[in-house]
Image 1 (spheres, one colour):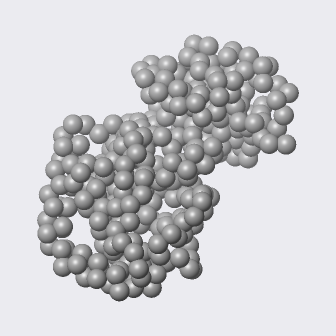
Image 2 (cartoon, rainbow, N blue to C red; image 1 turned 90 degrees about the horizontal axis):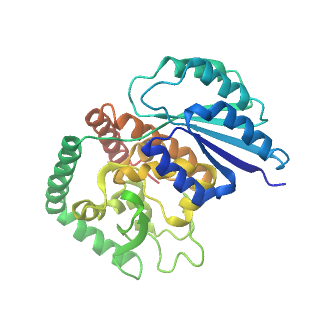
Image 3 (tube, rainbow, N blue to C red; image 1 turned 180 degrees about the vertical axis):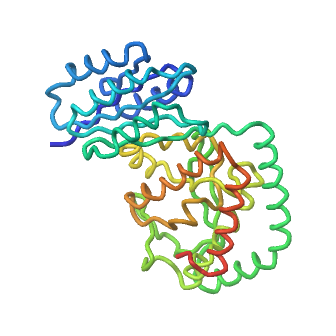
Length: 324
């Protein structure tokens, strides 16, 4: 029997309202409840009664703290009720600010509970000067890079043509800022018509990859045309790995918080790419997603330091040929 996922969101903040709307579209209105903190404890009880007998069930509880911190006894009561379920996941909205005492208590309380997992999830709120500074740097850096690397572009184009028949560039629809689709550009590293039918992820021994394409991937040369995506405003130098809608739907069935990434531009490089690398299946995409979520959380606290760390690691990956 397929496990039923029930979702309870507690808190009536703007972020909560936006998240609940997307969760309803994803999971269905019958599997989502939105409560305010005043009715959270009794509301959880009512939900248990209503959903009793729904078969094998996992409950996901999303906590959105408001200006006034909930009483510790209220948090304790919520956690205790959640433990009544055989499988439960508790998420706490973490804006990157100092955590209230109840959060530390919750982490300690649930640390040894095998059937109940606890995570903090982020929401990026970069201010105007951070957005402007990052965007200005992106445009200047990418424009200069396109000029200085033009001989590399010409050499790559020649080698691609000599290696296999087909166009030099390859484009694909990805989902980026505000959940909007855009066309991403790359140097073609696979034979023409490599993907037939449903979308496929590549792997290290993928026979569809050409000889020169394999070298480009190792040194991430195939990503260079995305400098144009950055200038256009579709992407940033550093962000998260943009995915296709087909794979996003599969990811969100397991991790509905993926949409939080839509608050920033995707990047040519990312914390997930330098620390994890390319993913060969959806499970690996979910593991890499943890890195991107961690980047999103840190972006609200020390954005410049975080981007510099990712940039330095990217340089190491490129020059050491650690891509695949």
